[in-house]
Image (cartoon, rainbow, N blue to C red; front, side, top):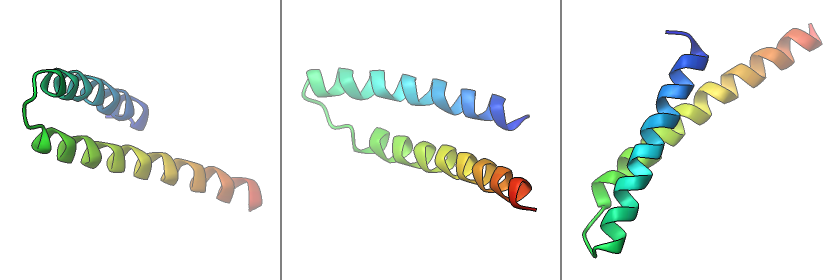
Length: 62
């Protein structure tokens, strides 16, 4: 799977988790597990984007 497709998948999953978290907040339910998943996905996505940027910068400099 390409990095762009992987990022899109993560974004879709983040959107789904946001909807679940919003629902649980509105209904007064616990959402601790969903926030852990959300943070993990954000970290993965940011790591991929960071790698992509550093590679582009490396290509420009050398």
